[in-house]
Length: 286
Ligand code: ADE
Image (cartoon, rainbow, N blue to C red; front, side, top):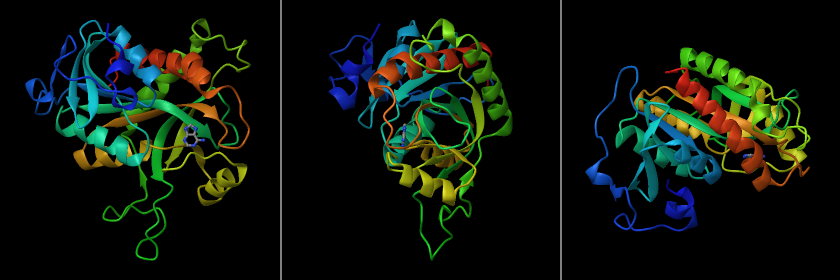
């Protein structure tokens, strides 16, 4: 079993030759596409704890370094996967997604992480699956309408409906017995619900009621805000890759501190992500 944190750039890096199972990227990138059912799945985790939980379940993982990132390639529930930390913010996540698409040739990308809840019904501990994504800080007006992606003529990107339907169903299923892994009551959390809708991404951690309100005013149907999803969507759009963005709500994007963030990620978001990804892989989604 490998330790993601010991090999991750954000907490220090190791040379590619000094770790068992770790090789240079050029040795085993698996260049070329993996079209068709059962191909390579790219798993982007926002948090090191989430990534570690995935690695711990892989019987045969090996690390591949590329672009300052460590990609963990192996099997999860019998499916071939590459798991990697996304990096924080749109640019970092775009680099990671581009490498998954172009260097590893993944067939699809699933992103898991946390987000701030903006929709009225979205509570801390709920999960939001994106049916559309927008970069809330994209504004090239007056050259283009606010939020429009220059060159694409669109402001919202939509994951493939069939994958989104399968993911929505899989998440709902996974959350049914999540109380077996997460002490919801002790943490003061309700039974989680899953929501499907708009996720807004931008290079900003939204931590004031005023900023949250501004986002709601511009995007009345927004459910959640985070810092990477819509960028990954743009990369997947460019490469023609199916993708899913799945976010556990860690806060209400306001000044109210709920639980300790690290504790939330360790005790709630990380087990949720693992349960969700495992359920999706077992159901052979994609
Ligand atoms: N990720 C988790 N909570 C967030 C917030 N409030 N703003 C942006 N990204 C987040």
